[in-house]
Amino acid sequence: MGCMKSNTKSQRGRRGLVWLALAAVVWLAACRQDMFDQPRTRPLRRSEFFGDGRSARPPVAGSVARGQLHDDPHLYTGRVNGALVTTFPFPVSREVLERGHERYNIFCAPCHDRVGNGNGMVVRRGFRAPPSFHIDRLRAAPAGHYFDVITNGFGAMPDYAAQIPAHDRWAIIAYIRALQLSQRAAPADVPTDVLKQLPEAAQ
Image 1 (cartoon, rainbow, N blue to C red):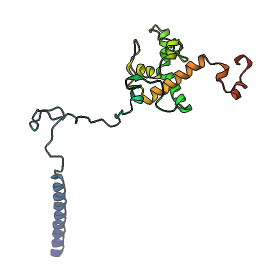
Image 2: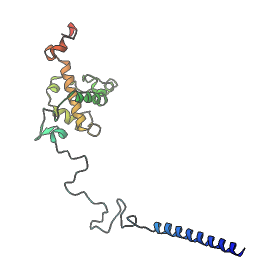
Image 3: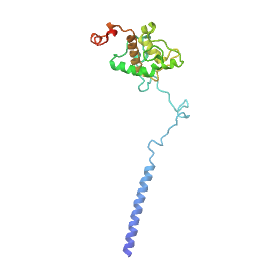
Image 4: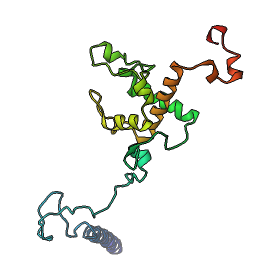
């Protein structure tokens, strides 16, 4: 019996040491400071570290936010040397026109309607009507004019710079040019092989 009691006490002692060791490991891990306890400031709180008393530091002069390096004025402003451009900053492909068609129907058609006559659904509900894209003034307007209006707004039209990325603005303009051409297209503008497939009335 004495040996059994001695073994039981020994086992309890070992278990106690194991638990004590585990508790020490947990305690030591909890005491790690790393970067959590380093000197820091909360946003917009006063700081005595800097001479101006501000904890937030102004950006370095000339710094540009990620994705905001708009170093192509043709693409991002529709101007070159201050003048409105007459060309597109990238080739106009079928994919560009399809993208422009989609974006036009989302952002432009509610006012300008699907063909650009300026009789969209909100106009029919009483909103001020925009001019038709098919008047001589807008047919002759440079591509940069449309980019400037989409970006900055004009008259009753608000700006869409925040809603429509620059590439999509140009895609919309390409589609507007296609709409303008479609309303005054002549048989000579249609490829011969396509023209043969059209009804005689269209020719």
